Image (tube, rainbow, N blue to C red; front, side, top):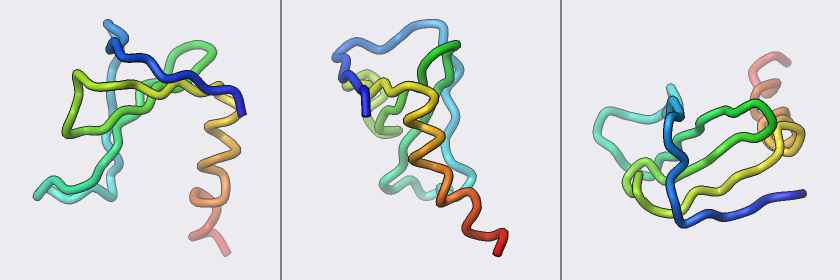
Amino acid sequence: MNNAESSTVATGLLWFKSSYSGAEGGQCVEIAGAPAVVHVRDSKAVAGPVLTVSREAWAEFVGPASSEGRA
């Protein structure tokens, strides 16, 4: 998997938190899509590091989770 960690937050991105995240906070991640990559960050540390992965790697990662409920 090709990934990179950045200590700077990409600007101009629209971040989304999982719909499975509760209103009380907790351990959540947010994602922001870009043309060739997906950025991932800790929702409690929005100015912290950002993990950047290719769209293909992201699809491979979430694929099993998104098809889990379709059995």
